[in-house]
Image 1 (cartoon, rainbow over the protein chains, first blue to last red):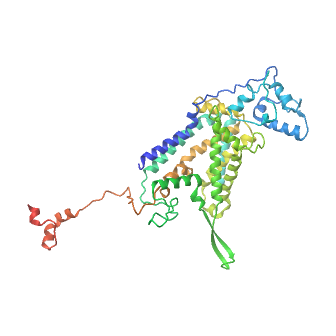
Image 2: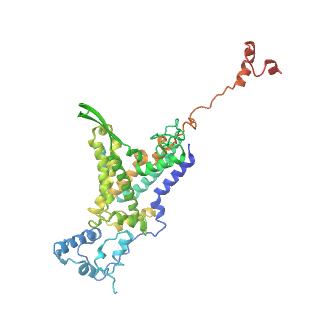
Image 3: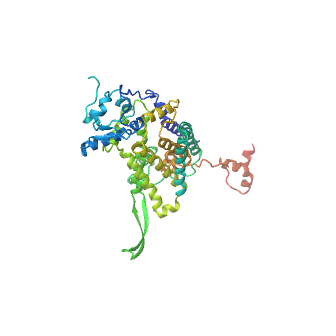
Length: 127
Length: 339
């Protein structure tokens, strides 16, 4: 093998780089559950759980457009036809009133930093 | 072209069907591990194979004035004569694709005003350089961004990259510019092969397949982020399970995620055996990694057999008597040799 030192060094660097997802995980903590604390007292959200988990950001974006651009403050749930007031502050945060135990649990772990709180007040339960 | 497109669609469809049939663990757990092993072992095998191949001639690319007399200025980056110069040329080649920047396009122009008839013209063409640079850097950034699923807590540098990438604040989830540019660049690289007749003539399945495959990865990824969403907290739990060698079930994840993962695994499996190995290959290219010092240093072909030398002393020993008879001058006279 020619230039054996350089080639082996190259192979080692490459192997270390491309296995980084495996060994880098050990520097931090494991992530086996989101640890989200759901609001007590309420059984269901405005849509079903799967939809809310995957699509809540789209819903919130549409709510913003409806409320601020189209002046429509009524949302009809696709789940049961129930009518809800389009308002983050008065509808969502009424139940999901603990930012640290709810929003942040997934958002920080997955590096999602939406710009909700540049206008809205971060809900801190009991403070 | 269509065969390779169909092949990629088939892989996607198999993954989709597999995920729907409850084989998500096969596509989500077994395949990624196999793909990573094949990828790393395949690359190592490729590099060893290249390292074992001898370089018979010194064939560095000379893109400028070579080292000469003191008063002639050497083009140190395009025609390096030292290892250090080769290093810098390689750095520029890898980071900025300098040789692609010199790309020219040849065309026969009918009814040219200068020759009053057809004339071949050559001009500098920077599109390929521009889009391949965009493609490679956006792919790198997208790859780095994905580390938010591999690490907990997410390092601030990745969050910073994401904040710059999504700085336009379009939509929710925020539109990442690298994803869009990557899609545009891959479509250019594909369109180039399809619509340029000469290029289409020389393009084979192994040219189209990686392009369609990467397009599939990009489209499924964009689709997962903006349209057919999956819950990324569950994705992260699943991915962290894989990287900690404690796999969790993939049954509850969106089938589109399994398609994305399967296409990425196909890319990893295919990578070491395709033209995509130009990633390590660039460093093994004799036209790039040799200094242009052929006038000072003799390049010995490593596969030359050992030389059978016949020195003058041995020659004289063999023919001394005949040489003495012919009256030729000798270093040792015959009487002396006999002593």
